[in-house]
Image (cartoon, rainbow, N blue to C red; front, side, top):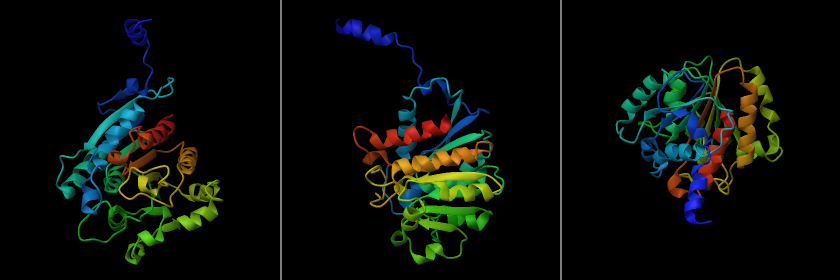
Length: 291
């Protein structure tokens, strides 16, 4: 068999990838992926450029996965991009665009974690609880807003409940804990509660008691560096990726009859391997969330 026959054989294959159910037209589809491809907030926080490229890379990997007719449609909706250089105006524009989204299942892919602020501000949520998986509190009380301030912004402007999981005490100054109501489970406590990352049942009571919508937010730098190196601040003592998968699965089970919102932020493809290992891992998490 020559190369011509090989090419002809490949051309006969029917595509059943998830790309076939993706549309760039905003509509009232059940699933929406919101794209905030801007890392200005990371730079304003002293981080490394590149997270703006993350959302497109993750979608590129996701499009390659087989669908098996489990997902009917996905709207790809651009919220903001790297051309936005006025941070405050970008947040206002993002809130306006997000307020138009009506999907039951939403995935938000951002550059910096600052994009969680317009997400929660723009969605019509009932008594929102944010479960944030992160090494940093992102509650800085700085004079300017950036990727380290979104939860301080939300707390100052909206009534939210906040549960922070995976926090490193040594990575957060004492002022970040002050003047804001939140529950914090640092990495040391998390290891104890989860039986060394094997059990997520310690969160069952949180889901059972909360009467309202729940947003699940992931800052990729919460993930252990051996599983995720493509971030601005690599985590030497982070959460194993498979444990994160367990947490997302638990979130889905408890919110199956509610609006489901998953945010993934701060993945930086400039620091990924040639195999795109980290991108594929995060894309598989998105895939599982969609099905």
